[in-house]
Length: 286
Image (tube, rainbow, N blue to C red; front, top):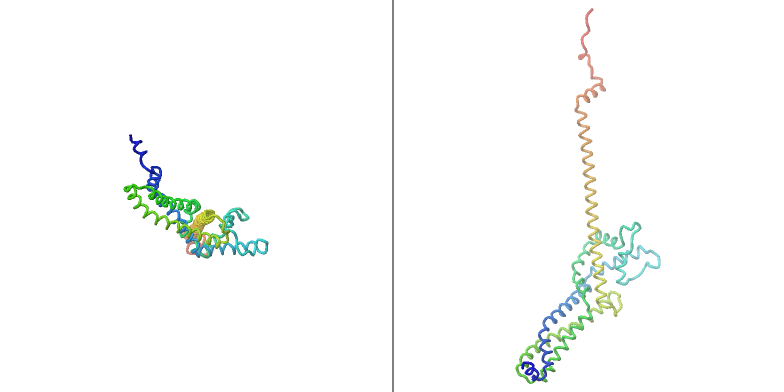
């Protein structure tokens, strides 16, 4: 009987789809907005961060210095994926890399540049997302809300219209604003990617992935540097302590040696005072 009653409802399938969309709207909207916010925050942080530009300048200068007058020297720029190759360029002893040298130089000369590790923390989140997929999800939300308007026009049911009209009036504004923001961000992202010398066709997720991997590599190299510095300092302190103890023991030994009776006697003998006439026994009379 229930099935028969349901079958009599006009436009049943469109109504069910509209109600299902309404139920899932908040969750999908929040997810899409959060993803978009992550991309937007990361894009602006990278584009407006002067420390990023300064670090790239240092890497370029060091690269030109090391390559000297070779064909690889004297360049005016490099592709971002070259940053990941810094970890592959080994020193002669194979104990460190060019990245370690860069990190050591920055630590000695401009340590404030390490602040970008926290300032660009959002990049790691964006690197795990797919911008193209986010745009598709936002477009699907916008189209879904618009489809509800068509359903409402075809359904004369007053109660259904009352419920859906309230939802539609709110959702259409939010969906359109989100879609507009996504289009603006897509344009900003394209400009940012070109600003760093990459092709405009470069996928945003690839751009963020390179930056994320580079920041992680810097962080790891810095951790290794701090550990090495701590070990060096500990070794220096140990060597200094051992040297001081050795010196102190030597001084104590020398002092004890001077104060001993035998040492004093030997010292007096050297000075001709060990056996004075007063200390000699008197001669016997004949």
